[in-house]
Image 1 (cartoon, one colour):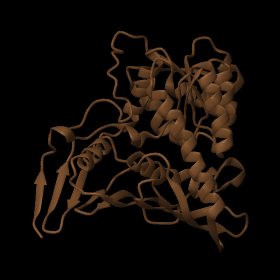
Image 2 (cartoon, one colour):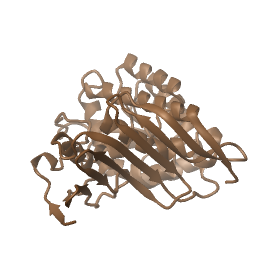
Image 3 (cartoon, helix red, strand yellow):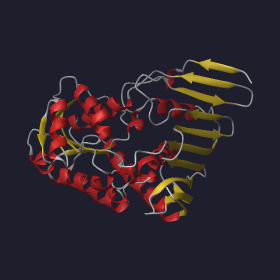
Length: 360
């Protein structure tokens, strides 16, 4: 079977903005969006806060966490003010709040930030249940504030390339989607092993392939079945699978967990071809994605430009705030609807999962 490497056609070329934000917003002359960071997570310290200080559209003003000592260390490191969490929300020099607390606190502190009049960028998941997500979304709507989950992969242009190939008919009629996000076991003290803090593989890893399925197959996905490997001591889910179906009849399967070798991919299979994305959720900024299109008689590879999805996420959020808030940016309604729909899928996977107990 011959293999051909292809330069992406015009419709597959990368663009500078995040995938869901098609509007071109000129923020060159605008004041950067001033952020306060709620939480001193390892991920925030390693990835998001350094990017926030480097992004021209954002400025880190203060950090507040559950530990005053750790908050001050973060503040010293990033050259900003240290604060308590409650005091941070009272600052009048902050436009928006970035939340990287444990998942069980996302909904509560997102609501508190919205009540304080701050726009909110919250790490996924937005909450731990659909009911909590709906409450936070209603609050953002009532106050006309921007509310987004920091699902960085949604801002990578490789998914535009996938959508373009589908739209051009290269796959024919879609029949199935398969996505997976798995990685090795975590350190034993990691908060993702603590049920009371919103731990578990579904909320941490499963939401990625679920969100990818919704991104490419559209709204209205239904859960047809699920399984989960759960820890005997407390029922924490360590890994799992789910089967879904779209309103148009496309079948989807997702796999997730933190007891595997690393894997981050999805594929779409149509009547004419199969398309695979190998680094779907966490591609490094310098990585050049390669989409693999397999037809019966040949394989075609599309090499795309590298892109920094974290910076694109921050810039897209800042653009929405600078444009005048949620009402001035019609895309914001879609962000809020998708966040609620994702938590509805999570609730359905939980409800339907056949649980297999393991020692863990």
